[in-house]
Image (cartoon, rainbow, N blue to C red; front, top):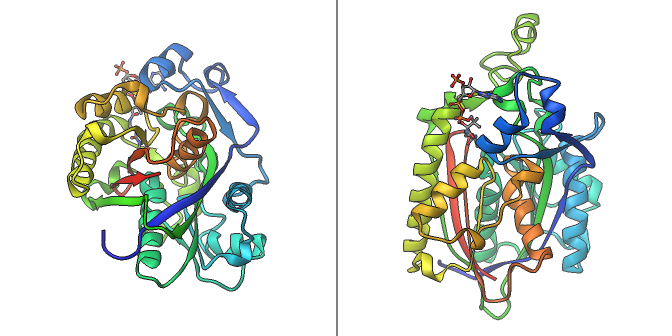
Length: 329
Ligand code: UT7
């Protein structure tokens, strides 16, 4: 990597209190705890309150990350929020968060790369830090997917959930540790596999779009599943190669939490034992951009990541987008 080394100096996360179990879903759609558990690994998921929006979840996660970093929001030079469930189409959730945090009038913008949003956000922040433009950047991934889920559609409502994770990034003062390699990719040819059809300029809101339930997420899960395994495996191989590493150098793997079977398949292909892999989807479901951000914070809190460990992160999601990263802690 060129330029100054970037470090994640702290993380924070926020999971809403309200829980929906598989048993609750059995009462809402034609599904079963047995099907959801064996086909996805998910047991429970957390859902935001009616009045809670993405910026509220982002705020709680950010405050924790700032506290752990021991800095005030006024020290931030930029805020990036990765989300596919912004408070509204515009203004950006990052601007709303900037105001809530009491940050200075620093640049603040949203980044939309679905499940890859947190890693895309870190890679953008890394550019500003490694070039010497900025010192301290807050990257937050915040999702309230429960608000765009059709609770009558068993294809999606059993998987997705709400949550937020934040990270404070800074240049490494001693040039040790930090981001080793980053690989990003996208394939718009797969755009129709997952998304919300209405509410944008292609299909503005109308009585028909509401009646047709077009403001809810639609997903071709099976096709996504196959692509996820292939693309995430390739992304992991590529980022290891870019960092002159092999899977043997990796101490810990934090994959996107879409489905336990995707995680197991990718982990097997890159020859990692499952005890080197962080999994929280049984409790948190798939929180899109927030999944890796929350998992990273939880893994750190649980003491699973030690100084000097090499951490592999990999994601795949709507767009299609994918991203992978190796960080020395
Ligand atoms: O976050 C990134 C983007 N999203 C993803 O990466 C999601 C990736 N995809 C998946 O995780 C999986 O494809 C799903 C969990 C969404 C679905 O699992 P699957 O094993 O691919 O199921 P399927 O769609 O192939 O359906 C298998 C069967 C079908 O029944 P028949 O035709 O075999 O009788 C479905 O109708 O399971 C049925 N089915 C369900 N049954 C109970 C589908 N959804 C459900 C459900 N409950 N919720």
